Image 1 (tube, one colour):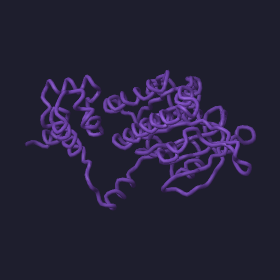
Image 2 (cartoon, one colour; image 1 turned 90 degrees about the vertical axis):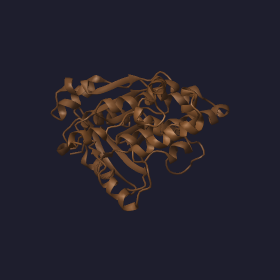
Image 3 (cartoon, rainbow, N blue to C red; image 1 turned 60 degrees about the vertical axis):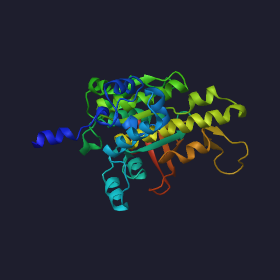
Image 4 (cartoon, rainbow, N blue to C red; image 1 turned 180 degrees about the vertical axis):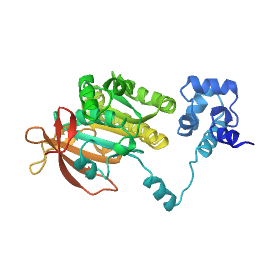
Length: 322
């Protein structure tokens, strides 16, 4: 077998799985399971429901997909080597990059939360531009997806930020896939579609601005709390799978609410409760300061220390204070 043929053999599709003929493959594709990755993270019951196959057969298909994708036990040393190869996207501020351990990392979720005007959306815009930079300038030479739940996306800011880093504004905008999420279920459906889109396009950043706004509006009050948290938990697990399987950076923003029971310290906390506390890899609180200055504080991250720094929002984007 030639080296070219051997290389092609490493690229598998769902028909390489045992028990998946053309008819079953068509049913899987129509139901949104068009890739090995989508099948590998499915449950046997889900596949059984859409294909009509017995659950044991569906289980074998899922197991085979996981084996082809290399989902297996790894040594801690192998894991270390993988983590050493995690890529980073610059925020545009050296201060903020240093606080985050080198920038926004792939295979992880980074959450920015804060009050209105704290810089959350500005950071999302800047990262959507910066991911397109060459690697030696802090980018990944890749595209971005921007899921907009609040109508905050502004092409004018993208244009200014692109000029600020020396990129062609039109080309930058062509490489950002924007979509408006109209409600929480639509938002979750969009993420499901990304499992297919990310495979076809060179996407390395997915932004959701903001993650919780629809959930908060659609499930108000204590009587709806359990349903809201259940859906949020499912949504976060979607995003975690997306980040890990495709080696992409996921950035989410979140709103804050006041806690009337806090008399000392910061009375605000991120919306979403304990579900959000456990899911994102890195949680960063943003606060307004004087003028165009903003304060970023790492609240929770398993591999970088807590700390804070200052960055500024300029006409050209996120920068360090002079």
